[in-house]
Image (cartoon, rainbow, N blue to C red; front, side, top):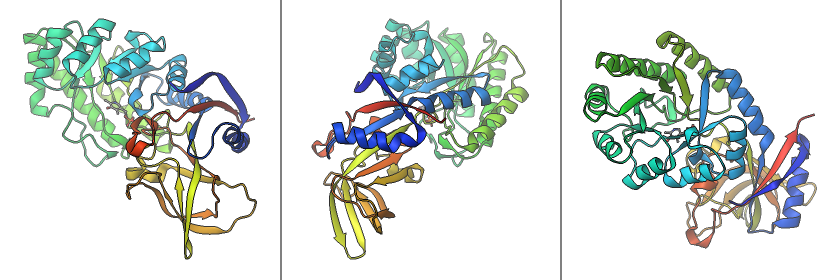
Length: 392
Ligand SMILES: *Cc1c(COP(=O)(O)O)cnc(C)c1O
């Protein structure tokens, strides 16, 4: 991991820009972008989570951002973890986190990954097919299972899960019967994921109602009482979050009056999105009439991959070395030779020069972790500097 553990700079909220300037001046020339992670933001988000969801344990979905300092901070704040592969499991375990705190929330796992989970003691996973039951029975029969059901609506989130995951309503009874009564495995609950960036809080209510139906089917099949409801991810730290939380809390009361039910969630984007700031350099420039085009040292084969779908969430702040600059219509390209590698188009920016900084906010979700080495630009090892902002 590339995190500078040990050194956390404390900075006033309005001192970020100066800090960024000084890191850039001392350590990073053009061609070397870097991240700043504000650990105080993670603390504030955990407070927000606990306040809105006092009875829902978050299992942070580490695929969203695997930065060690982030995962460690979340563990210290009481989070558990959602992993999908051997590598993610090992990353979390290597930070001293217990296997009991991990859910292997990938409904289709290769045998080697199932064996690894058994070997290291990760004993909770999800499934949505008969073959998965067979594999788990053979390689990890003590594992507890959650049945992954399909989330209700395709339009309730910006990136729905589509056909890939979740059983259909008519598959529930035969699959539960097979897993519990034929294979003899322990199905202890139900999970769903409404899709990333949920837009419509009522899809959580529908999904929770559907989960209730599964609990009832299990009861009818004579399966030991299920205990876990896993409401998945899809959350962002926006005002909609509180609305979703109250819809979920109310639906749980309505459909699951049992006080012994254990409710968990798998938030990904919620925690890192607003805590990470990406700092890039202007590495090239072309003036064409009224418009200016810039090249920077990060692009869509690196942290900007998600901006291909939802660039609207990212905040852009230029930091120029010159004082007053004229505002110009601007386009920003990434460094590779692919014409798709464009970060922003027709935005208003003060005119920038070679080596000036362009800072991007809200860059913590599905950013560095989806980077590549395409064209020889290594977008996987961008370093992260840790800060704690205090707002007083
Ligand atoms: C990706 C993923 C998550 C996290 O999703 P967000 O939309 O980032 O909250 C949670 N659970 C599962 C199973 C996932 O695949």
